[in-house]
Length: 454
Image (cartoon, rainbow, N blue to C red; front, side):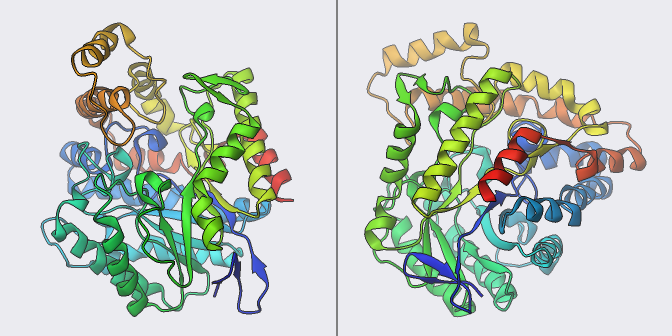
């Protein structure tokens, strides 16, 4: 098994291992921009179940989990030279809100399959709890239907997370291809006072269930603030996330100004050094758990995005940092490969409507339907100039509440209605659109990564 030795990870033979790979976003933690639905996962699943019924909805979602990642996907990643996959999961695979603390072992069936597949191809897994009970951050990717991270407000939710991690750690304690556990993705504790004591408690509980595996611990405020850590835990990596502003949907040009902020290679390195200061000062390993630009389809814009990625990878190499690029597979915004065929034939128009409305934070330029929303922004800025909500201020919060929650949730019935009248065979065909041999490969990105890993 891997373990931490100073600033590096090493195997049992003492050889250093730098984990470099991708995140498996949108699989066991579904995200709106990855598979094309609106709002958050549990709301989407509820809408689809209402349309299809429990049994047929389960047929579709189970088939999607099977098709989204297979042996061929593992072989592709290994062939690029990668050696790890960060696997985001949603707590709802193991526990139901109406039966808290009761762990369903069936939740392991898909995760076991992929962890074993990856191991057969020489790739380590980092198991990442991306959605915790009550939602640990303010956004869709923690399966949050609101903007409130209630996890930090209720001990009940924290107790459930500890219980789930005891079960996961106990299950994988002897698995040699599990690099470790990423127990809380991108926490957003507004006060900053709950997270430190909670990490102390969680680390102790996981260590009791599994004393061997590495803990990959995100800083507060979406893995950027490490002041909350009260000690440097043994056999732990403190994980930073390092998205470049110029690489967002509203970013660019590169090099150039993005929303008044200059971005070039030197600026990227300054940001990385700022975000990694805690790790460097404590002599712990450097690992970037998430980063990566999105792609627009415009050749010149995408050329600039590829340059952002090249520059970030060169910076990480210069500092000996491992990394996990976000994300492997989706419907065309960011993935190394993306779905086509039956699924996009059915949902492509809806995905385009979401894009026109800016209903996904990750794909939004924050300028869509500006004629409608600009007056609201002006009203808030004029009437409430002191309002500066966590985590990113008034402009982002207004968009989150109106565009990414209200409008996104209003779109749920339209998305679910697209399943209406489909046969079981057609549902399976939709899910199988995510099989690798039915996906489009983003060849420039694949070549860039292969070259960087060579």
